[in-house]
Image 1 (cartoon, rainbow, N blue to C red):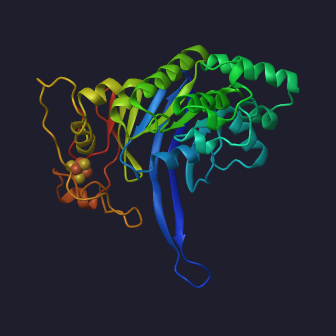
Image 2: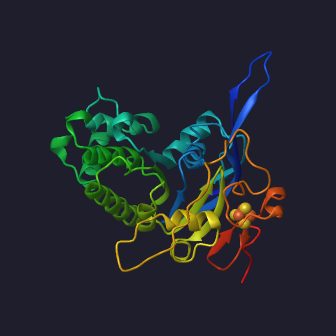
Image 3: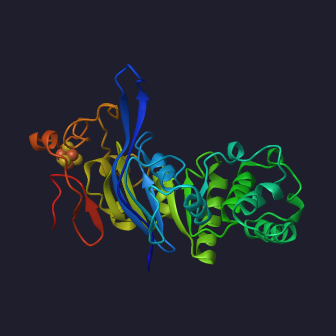
Length: 322
Ligand code: SF4
């Protein structure tokens, strides 16, 4: 399988203060992120809020500018792409947002909302666009009767179906789904996740799935990257990471997931302290201020990402190859 997306050493600094005569201050939202996604694969980024996972998604779609690093989509580095190249990128990479209501113009009919990317990116006639829109409504589990209504007339789950239809209408290869089910009731969440899985098979889609919810990530992903303070600390095969987490932060995150079977017990690892301020991240391993295993070297040296076995890569001084 080919790589649809390769991200290498991606960095993003946001200026948060400073002007002409003032000292500039920056926040390191993404510090050094590398991963890839293959055709037809779901790679999830998971971590606490503020870890940089949503910013990573927005960098890939170039909704925000890249400070440093590579974003290779279909073999082409788009990290510094401008104008016409960006239009092409937005045809092949689309986003699904957490709150479909906020991302859908309330004054537009559903058929126009779904057709809008075709108006921007193609030269199709109105009849050709309408035909595609009506086909797409059926594909996402809506129907022709919904076409002339407005977004506020729909439930949260139906609105997310409209958001998915809009994202798929230009036939993208890669979808970035940023917390796409976290605003929905649990019963509706599974319908949307199953729809995403069905569409992936049907159209050989690749997903970058961004979520703080480990149960959702376990259900939808093939591979997973665990983010902490702007970096990936562990990544690899979903089963391997959920069965045998190696990084202390991954262990702590997974220990907080409730188990359905009350006869099974697991040791809960509670992290001390809060996530440090990304404006002034800790030296060495950025997790050392909260890590129960931290040693002196952790405060001094940034751990490199290492291939620990054929399924997992981990950035921790104390985790080594078998
Ligand atoms: Fe903990 Fe040190 Fe490993 Fe960081 S490098 S996760 S501080 S043991």
